[in-house]
Image (cartoon, rainbow over all chains, first blue to last red):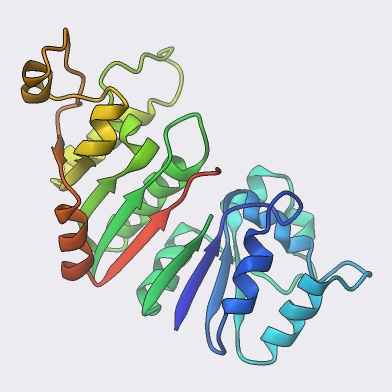
Length: 107
Length: 132
């Protein structure tokens, strides 16, 4: 299992859309820093290619996480409600790394 | 479990060093071992002893230094990245006839072999990348 971390906003960078096609079944994706703006993907009404990919990957046991501290720092707490991304704190981040075979950092 | 951490960002430029620091703290809190911190590219600025801040602000460099001292961490600064960005220890300052040296105590200058070694010896290697 590979943990993919994404640290840039999908609204200003290709990071997330570059990462998603390389995510394999069973992998995990963690949004950190400005990457947490990606939390709005897959909840908006309009289906973008990124949204479709996330929904499709969820069916292959890919898990999606966001770093809670970075969500709080950007005032995005409300966006967690109904999101497909599960919040983790730094200790949860360490656990995700510990459980992964490798970490791929997208930046 | 043994972790090694690569830090590619300078303080104030992007969040990489901040995220890496908090991750390192959490790693130690969870009783894992940090085999090596590797400061590479602009990450070498985290090892500057000349960064001077108002006292009531977070001190990004001395905060690393305290963590390194407290937990006896191996903190390696890539020598090639460091020299070209003006981060020098006493030996390099003398060798290149520079008027000062500025590598914080607790950090050491070394080559990429130390990164390869960290990748081989650690259970996990994680990179904190810059914004650009």
